[in-house]
Image (cartoon, rainbow, N blue to C red):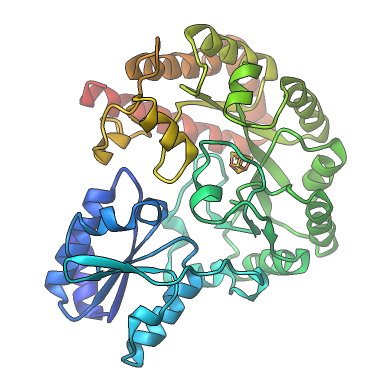
Length: 427
Ligand code: SF4
């Protein structure tokens, strides 16, 4: 939707409460849209949510006078309380979890505790049913149409760059019960006959492997027809991966991050290189596809360690790989490291988006400029995916599994679209 459509819809609907989701690269635009909505609907109360305003609530409210508040962190219950409070004409200062604009200053209400009974939340797929057209949403790694859900919140690991555990969901693992997750699979299968895949977008699905296997057991028991993908660490055992495959898991996304043990240790990944190799052997044996992620520009990164990462990626031989520079987000240890070390080139958040609309963050570390990191990532992507052996494997896969063939074609189209945008942007 363009802005005009949004304003027209909002004008017709005339809501009392408007909630704007945000992201770091779009934050100026988000606040600007909120300001325009406020002009259109002066009586409305506008709240911002997201990792960025959670980390920097006052700074974000200072960007424009449209939003009246930030709902900080995990905001489900904060927004519900806020809506009730506004409906009853109460004092919003009594709603926990807010940073409120009060004239020229700001006040923070008491912190909002994290939700303990995650099963008490309604299925997000019910909201898809009520409000969204599933055909509007596309994700390159998944078959289409896809619905994304979350089966657990929080990750106990301490990766220094990772934004959600540090700003939102916390480090304590708070899972939904296996029964509740399996029930949502059944609901989606019944309600959306066209949906082909479910994305379980947990920070880490396999924190509790016993629970993961129990979800799989229930899915097999209810003859689950839906494929699914999820995010895991490279420390999952074969038994769990085999159970996942048996229950319909098609693909897992894994942050291998670096081929240098020293760089892995300095980002506090808590992972040994040998574990990654063992994981890949187990995933192949189980028949699960792996989308791997490599990041460059972490503490200790050099040209040599970046090359090690590319060699590591080739040896791992995942179904696909992404190579990105480290993106530092406000609220993370990586952000503090980059700021304190003088590596952050600017705090103009629009620079968190490259000219070709891809992720970016303007960091130069000693001996490795931002441009060099970006160029390496583009070269590594091509070096990994445009090898004759890899392309031949993809051809065989596309013939053997037509749904993967469709997905491969869409991914290729997306990549060439990105290349075209880069050329136009001169990026
Ligand atoms: S294991 Fe994954 S989700 Fe957990 S902190 Fe590290 S990067 Fe984040």
